[in-house]
Length: 408
Image 1 (cartoon, one colour):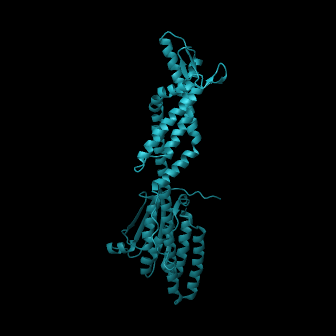
Image 2 (cartoon, one colour):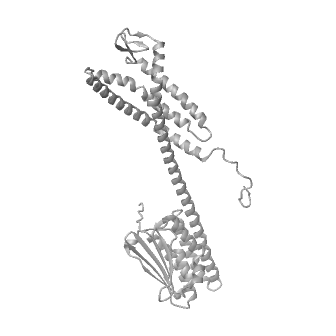
Image 3 (cartoon, rainbow, N blue to C red):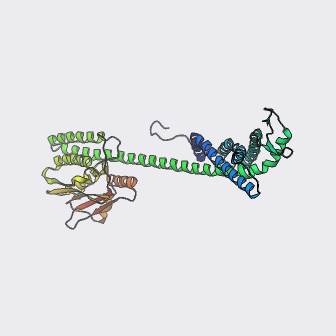
């Protein structure tokens, strides 16, 4: 960065990770913080599947004229289904770790194929430990391929494990592994979309906040410079009046600093600020300037942008009252109509034609105010300059009516 102008001297290094990487990282945090939810959902889902399967098996036995106790049926199905409970989070973690992109889909497909084999081996191994691992045609009973439950000893039978893997591999992959993989991808896509929306909303909010802060920072020096210029002009004419204006200005700046970086304030505070500014101008114009306020009490707690009225009042003074020899009048009115707040600033100056309107509305204070209203309220606002039938200039501001709740 240049030490004189603050400009950037060298190019920043190009980002090696795409923006999507940040979303995937946010998605990973989302899954890690809710890992227990995946385990709980897996337990509930597979328990429900086991219950349905147990009822279906009992019904099948009844249609064949045979009897099967519910306890035996549910135990058999739990031995079949519950090994899927820890395997489901494994598949979710696999999808989270190896998300298919344009440049890695071949590697991911190979990983998913290997994951399917691991899934089947793990399911067969866990089911082989249970007493309902495989049907023994000789004894016409179920038995374990790893443990002898009658003798209570280890009885590892590799040929039975091999037969179970060959018999169950296709069913485990097609009826369990692929559906879980698909569900994991749907969940991953939803969480990614949700994370992207959250990041987008946060970035938009930060952008609007920064924009509003920049716009407000433009208004404060603009107001200060114009007021200082008025004081400087008065110094050669009336030193006492200029000193009085300086005192009023210090009070006004203190009021502005009290609001800090806040963008919104109450209409009551905004009117107090405008009144402080008009007191400075009264020192300058004397009897040539009079002000009339017509603001109902039920609108004083309304929420308005800070420094909303001051640029328009300043515009009325500079372009309206300053051109009059006497009887300059400024009126500030407020009214509520349903869910809308209308604020009107009117002066009895010479008014403006089309050319003057373009010049006056393109000033820094007016242009900045337009941009702030657009940033704060979007299309739910309006700012109009008109010439009343009896002359002068009238500015009407429309914004949503919202009450400002101030903490005591």
